[in-house]
Image 1 (cartoon, helix red, strand yellow):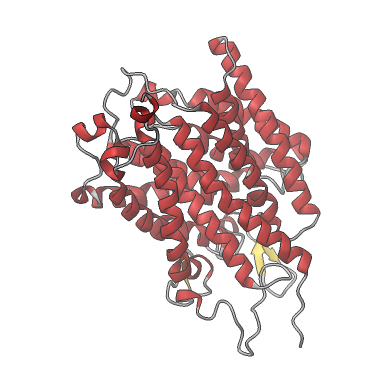
Image 2: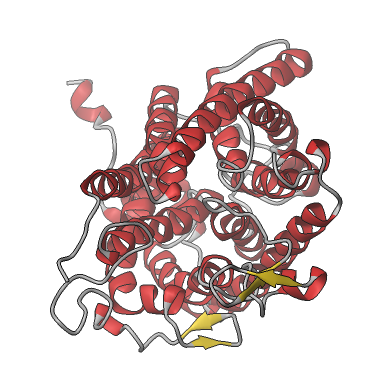
Length: 435
C-alpha cells in the first residue's frame, strides 16, 4: 500500500522541532545575560554543550528508553530495543514507519530530541559561575539518561504517569474502554507539552544541585547583577518564539488543537508578564526589564502542561497567577540560603508545579471550575509529586556520585572568572577597547 503522508502536518512538525531547537540558543542568551561578564561564555557553553551531547545520546538510546515498547516496570523502556534508531525509522518493506500523526515517525524523533536538550540545559542556570564544564557535561549525560528519559516514558510513553491501564491514575480511579479494544484510565493525567517531564523535572534537579554544589563566593553579600539585560530580553524573545513549537507542536498536527495551544501560550505569557510587573511595582516601586523577561518565561512554563486543555480566558488566569507566584518565589533563595543563581527553581519549578496542578481547576472538560469533580485535581497533584520525588532522588545520587570528579572550580579560578579558567576566553576584550 502506498504510504500516505499529510505533508501539511509533516511540514508543521519539522518546523515545530526547529523552533524548539532554537529555544536552547535562546536560553543561552537568557542565562548568559543574567550572568556576570566574567562568566557569560561558560553559561552559554553549558547550553551548547547539552545540545551537542544529548543530540548524540538521544539517537543512541534516548528514543528507545523513552518510547520503546519493552517497558521495564512502567519506569523506562529497554534502551537497546531501538539502539541507534535501528527499527525505529523503516518498516520491513523499507517504507517509513508511521508517527503520532499522518507523517513518518522519524519526524517525531526529531521533535522529541529537542525536548530532551532544552530540559537538561535549563538546569544549568542553578550552577552559574562556579562549576567545571567537564563535570557539567558528565552530569548532563547521566541525568538525561536516568531522569529525563524515564520520566518521558512514564508520562508520554505509556508508563506509570500516563493514562495507561497500568498507570497510577488507573489505580486511583479505575479504567474505561478506550474504544480500540483496550482500557485507559478513567481520569487520565494531562501534561500536554511537559509540565512534569520538562519543568518540574528540571526545576527540582536545579534545587538539588544548588544544595549539593553550594553557593557562589559572596552570595548574599556581593551584588551579582545581570551584566547584559538586552541579552536577557533577546533570550526571552527567542524562547517565546520557540515555545510555539514546544506547545503548538505538541498537538502533532496542524489543526485546531495546535491553534488553541498557540493562542493559550500567547495569552498566558502576556498575563504572566503583567502579573510579575505588578508584583514588582507593588513590592519595589519599579517594573523592570528583567521582570518582564522572567515573567514571560514563567507564563510559558505554566501554560506548557495545560496548553491544549484550557480556554484562552482560563489561560489568562493561569498566566497571571504564575507571574505573581514566580516573582515572589525568586526571593526564597535568599531567605533559605540556597544559590539558585538564575532562578530555575523560582520560575521553572514553581510555575511548572502551578501549571500542572492548575489543570485540575481550569481544564475545560474535567476541571473543578468547569463542572468537573475533584478527580482530575487529585491526579494532577499525584503526578506532580511523583515526578518531584523521582527526579530529586535520581539527581541526588548523580550529584554525590560526581563529587570525586569535582564539581567546583577553585576559589581563585572563581574569582578570576570561569570563562578564562574553563575556556581560555573572555566575552569582551576590554583591553583592546581602551587602546
